Length: 387
Image 1 (cartoon, rainbow, N blue to C red):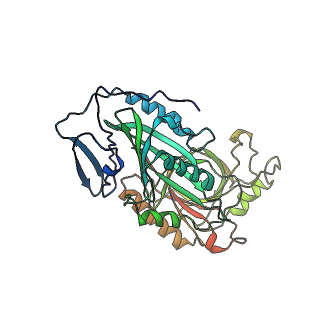
Image 2: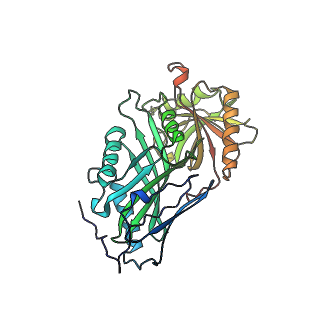
Image 3: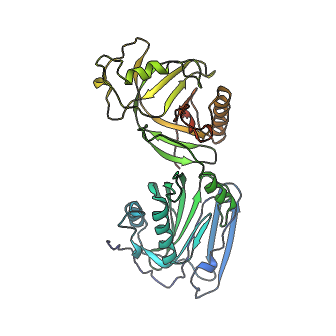
């Protein structure tokens, strides 16, 4: 493991200060997690219930020192180091104080050994996939990161997928330029302070059983997961489609399925994928097409032509979509209600939904118990920014 060159001394003695500011509704007292200061200190907490949380550490009769560590160097270090959070290389331990205050809504540790134990536990039980979106300074002694973590609990037979997105506020010790605190905030809950029963329920509800076929599906990255929906960045993909009758209907499915089973200009058989989409682009959700996604290694120019005039090939350029998952049989009333709820939540959060929606069905309804079916409603967004 490469050692970092992050240890720097300040011009004069200064007690460790881990300054953190992000949005839960209540502040956490960090004083007991800091080394004893040489002079009296006053701890002031300022809160805003909806959007801001700040912990200010002000010195009595002493001004802040001129620290010599390079903030941009630390930012660049995190961009590189955090990519190794759950791999065999691991993070560079020399960049952290021996007393690292770690806290998320349901876990906390006060030492470097506890911090590393938490990382190892997640790695062994959940096989996490960690994606770092950005890193930037957000205060004199803090850096904030935004991330997505997708995990599968391997101890349960159905290996449920747990998804968390959020921010981490990394506090910096001005005495040595090392990280002395790491506080996580999840996008999916309001009450992020430890211990959060809302956070525990968020974990439990993600343990539900979904039955999803082991088939290829469109590639996407999860940018954000809120309480009610996910925001995904979809890569381009190709569909074979024809006209349908309604979002929950199957009219036209035999025609598009026939294309991949060999009813095409070269009688080529194409592997089955998931999900089956039904899509409408009008506000009334009335004009519908039914679609099967083609394997990702296929290009439009190399695909055989459909035998039927009503069947066509189309490249979907991808983009950003808000997605709501649900189980059970997707009746027309259910799908329309889910679309209405999703659209309302998107607008409430200040996003701009496009007209229409897609229903994604991942299961063969004749071979899957209704209560474990996985369905999704997707609405394309005009724009989205991960601030």
